[in-house]
Length: 231
Image (cartoon, rainbow, N blue to C red; front, side, top):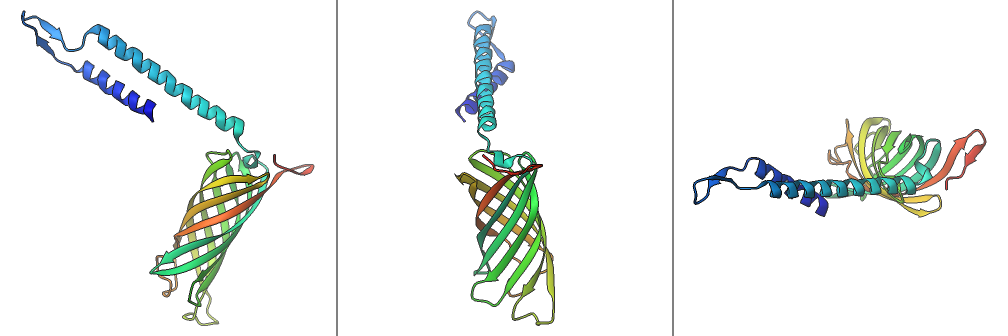
């Protein structure tokens, strides 16, 4: 942040010198506000800041490459589950979720998911199953991820007749962080927003936003010789 601020100041200084006007001294001769020596010093400082910033970026990139977990490489399989909590119209609902994923590209995984929702203090509950995709841009022991999913589900409540199938489709968007805790285990926290094409009036359109806590177990790469444990 300090380097970025310094760079911004230098750029402003260069812009000011480029558009600086001249004024006259006591002899009536035109004199530039910024002389050539000052401009040269500013350019030199800008180059030094640029080199320092490039070094920091390269150092960060090397750290990521040298310390990334093998979990996120193609061929790795993982199984995860967790709980979630949400609030809508002053009502609290809980969510139990499970997922099975496979990494097709470095940091990119896709798979199957299952969710079970229940509204606290109400007979409403829902279950849904679908597919999801995730991308982990940072893949060290503290890893961030973004995800999306599409699921098909069914609702049950006192407002829905037993013989009526109240089905719906939901689309989810997720943002979270995962922490390495054991050899092949990671814990994660995320926020997911869901958007439904149908909903039960007892729940309300606000149903969908939830804070989720979960755990993933990484089996390792699946190759011709079977499962190779991740390191």
